[in-house]
Image (cartoon, rainbow, N blue to C red; front, side, top):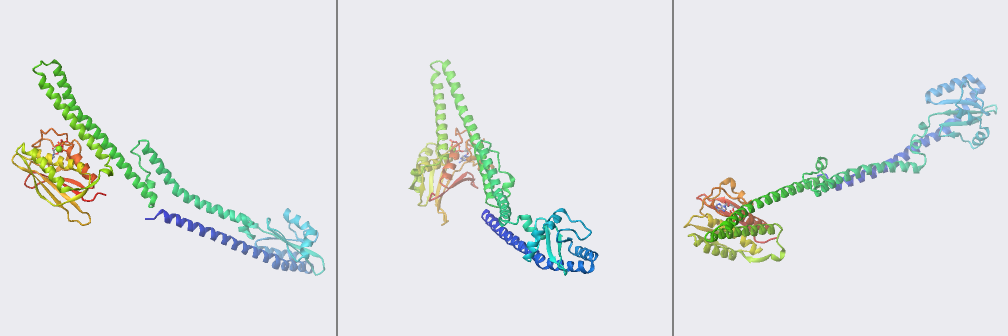
Length: 462
Ligand SMILES: Nc1ncnc2c1ncn2[C@@H]1O[C@H](COP(=O)(O)OP(=O)(O)OP(=O)(O)O)[C@@H](O)[C@H]1O
Ligand SMILES: [Mg+2]
């Protein structure tokens, strides 16, 4: 994965190298043109000027004109030839700037005394005043495009500060691109987060962010995953609320009907309706109690409720209580085998999870059969834990519904104990309690009939 760290690091190196290379190149180029220009001014110019002066005096104007035309073709620059006072000696008119410079006799003489050429780099003009064999002075001038003389220093500015400014601007442009590359997706992430915060849970991060191969891309993908889970969670809560209202309605409706009947009933009929009202009120009370347990477990257990306890003992206690209840209905609850297991967790909460499973088994196992409990220590040394198996001899659960029975309010229609009055919350509560202990719960049908519910519980609870 191309990480953001390396991206920033690489960009930084590239910018430093580019800026360094640009500074070096510009100064090398400036030096090169400077040297060439100086060469022209101090070696070629005096040589050519003296040659022209000699030629003018010995062979005449036409010879100089031909010679300069030739030179002009070779060098692609325009040459002019004046006398000391700035009068053109050839049949060609000079541009105004050249002419004006040639007229500055005093200045030209002063420079010539120092053995130098007069220059106007901005206009690309150079002039050299030299004496001819007769002692009269002549002025050879040429003009060329300034960029041919010093293209870099003219383009970036001759002053080193301008050059630095140009390079700085180039560096700033690269930094701007890098910064935008990093901040743009962050802004998108931020706007997606505010959308979610505003309740629009369908919002996802833009695909351009998700497709990135760096940390921001990973963050975008994780963000979408989180958004999906929040959306699913909210939908599940909404469904649960719907189910809760629906489940509360049936006993409430029956209670209202019984109350209505009670009002019109004769004193002899009253006890029947009163007992009905009591029954429905109990059912409502139990349902609300279970719902409260469910939400309390959902919101987590405080660490103060955690303790180290003897799981074997707990299983045996639940089995004994269940057996007492079962015997009244000609059934039995038996602990077939139990390894010695201690674990850390919330024992009272875990007790209600095991009780829920055992109660179901008692309800579904036929008369004269036994509910069997097995507690085993699991062998995995990396993940020490216990496996509790509760088995009955009832009709089991259709294969496709084996995982649905852990969903709140899910009851299997038409089972042998289909007329049970349960709310369908027992296993949902058990599942949450086991999950809270970092364990897992699953159900499967025994090959020779009956349901096996297995709870895997790690002995240490992180
Ligand atoms: N041992 C079992 N044998 C066959 N079916 C079972 C068994 N245990 C649970 N079920 C099925 O799974 C459904 C869900 O069980 P769960 O314990 O969640 O609810 P309940 O027993 O109906 O009601 P509650 O436990 O809230 O009083 C039950 O309604 C029943 O149809
Ligand atoms: Mg139950």
